[in-house]
Length: 544
Image (cartoon, rainbow, N blue to C red):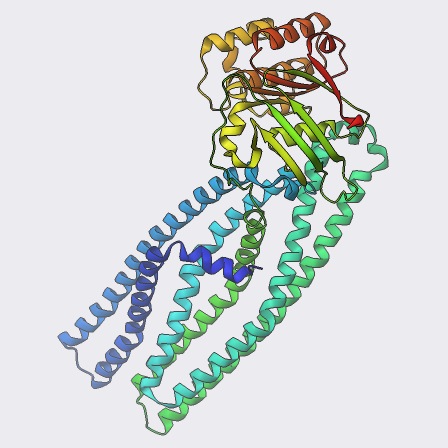
């Protein structure tokens, strides 16, 4: 199992070259910032001498130059971090866009896929948190380390104090860190659960409007909010404990450095200028510790965000082990030998020992009792889902030996699930494929879409809503049919493809499919009688 910290280091490893530049700048900034106390120490020594010399002015200029250089380097750091932020956003966007359609179907069976996309918003958390960790966190660490090194130059006693303080910081993070991460993950879990429930309320708002009197949607939201607040409070308590630890640590550090510095002055082991410089270094160290204190919650947010995004990237993708391309000339023949298949967690199985033999170009009507596995068979033949055991041969070759892209190009499917997305009508039909306009027009005529398109000024370039929200169900069916037919598939898998259409339209489309697409192998699930007249065979899978 990949831990959150491993994910974090893996993320940073992608930007090694940029991070090296950022840390080089941070080291220089840390060193330059220490020129301030050293310069002030020298200036105080000159002031004690009571003489106005050009050296004094040079030292003042040296301190101001150091402040300017530190500012310039910080600006350069911001530019580099911005490059990381932009690249991170683009990487995450393409990662989600690529992975969501490619995730193995079994992995998505128990989840609502659109809800997984919510994890993308943790990319914004990473964008906001990484600059603070990369710049502020590293700068604070460097200033503490360099400050303690400089103090050690003044006196070896500071070395022992620095080692003790380093051990204390390590113990604080070691003891409280894992619990803080755990409570942060629990808090995030209920945050996403609440977002998912609000999406559900928005998706079926008609139902909740009708039954709003019973306030079920509010009560369920209240339960989830309560769980979130309890876990948020647990996380806050961890943060509070860490804050108290850090406050105590800061007090111990300040007391130790001040007392030790005063003792060294009284013992005449350091002079007054060195003491003032040491106090400035102490202030810088304390400010750096305060920065670390403020960044603790950001670190938890980033690690939690990586874990949520990792939930997507950890899901198995479809394996594309095949190397062959489907030969589509003359249609596709199908042979199923003793196939067993089921949905996830269904031990009894739905398809048990199915045998099937379909010749290329045949038109087959699939029948069977409810629950006999008609829909599952279609998913198996489409390549979307894998069989548990047995053999599924396409053109006498096992289906897994074909590349997925090659097989999908040869198949056209129309399943009951609404697959209309927000985009133009043309985009919904073509799906990125290059299609001859004459073929699209032919399908428009056959499917009876002319009247629908003529009422829209932009025609095929009309933008439709996600899910075809303002379209009739018959139009949605026709668009899905057009999408399936536009690439002249060798295998057509149709499940109730003509539902909601008029009888005249159904007859016209069936005749077109069986006559014009005579080369295509067609398997259809439907109760419409005309299919029985046009199909060459009827296969009842309940009897297999």
